[in-house]
Length: 383
Image 1 (cartoon, rainbow, N blue to C red):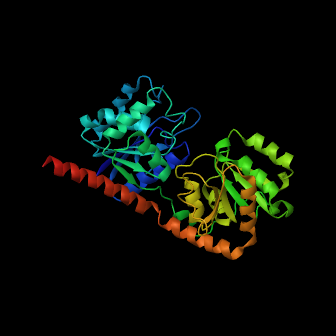
Image 2 (cartoon, rainbow, N blue to C red):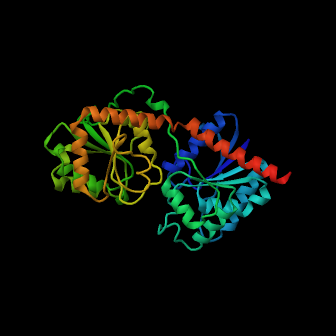
Image 3 (tube, rainbow, N blue to C red):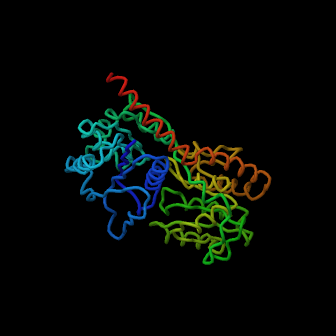
């Protein structure tokens, strides 16, 4: 099968959507299919090393606007199909990519599949409120042969736009191979971080992620009085300076370390050796890959009781859910996490089993089965 994955953001930008597209492209290639990724050129300051990828990637100019002159961006799709006549066009956003696919899919004679990663369809979100975005998103959903929902949150948002679409629920996957064996401790890591003695937050330092709530909870928890216990905050973002100042004002800076962006073996070590992970997000999460990576490392999670996280964290099995915007509830969960080693081990074992069900070979196989089903259905209808 010839497959085109179309995305408005790809490596070397690193985030959930970029990693999902990369993982699917690799796995489809591993399973013997011809794959090409179509994406804009990276933003200024980032250098694409596309030649090192095990699949082909074709770049077009960056979007000048996602509501003006959009019709022009059909041209890269049409040109690519002339060179690589793909059977399936899988767009990794409803708008703009899905809309562009809907505009020209009939001329390409390809089946159209859409996946939203959450931000483009969230009701009240910045992207859906852009001029023309809602109507174009609805048009794309109406034209699609199938729409993949990666979580209950995205399914609800998609149905709110176009309830009659052909929805299929396929959650994102996780690369299990980095967690098959322990990795060596990174030599540059803060020496205060010791195995089993820290809670890990890993994500963008943005107000939506709720790290300020986590700092307040840490200050209210019993961990504050134990100098050997640490809160490790890995990631970059606009809130870093404010969060550092907050930790200083709360008197917990000695027990908090800001690690900046981590990747590769350093990230794997942090996941493997944490006591647990924590995701105190305020509003919504579509399907956070970092949580599934934490599960793959056999570690439980503490998270907010919000859409997206409720899909993954099962209280009493894989972690704890607490009310969003509640430092006191979060502090209580932290205290429970530190207090009971047996419960922690049981939660970690359940978390690992959950991750095993989401290995990328299995998730890619479900996508491929979807592609085959819509192609077979179309062939039967044409007969």
